Image (tube, rainbow, N blue to C red):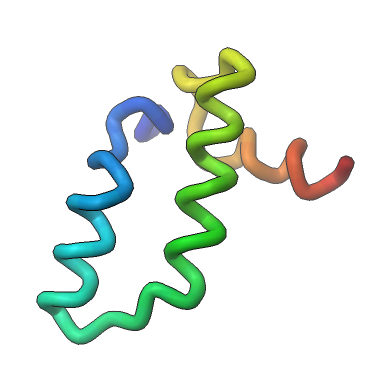
Length: 56
């Protein structure tokens, strides 16, 4: 299980995606949700914790 806190900072992930030719259209809102979840104290959970944000 990969904790949200283990994800690279937003800028690095988006830069790597751009270098690989991957569009940031889906990554940008996903990263915003991950950052929000970490701010709410959910940084040690997997990406499934983001589902709780989408349910609200």
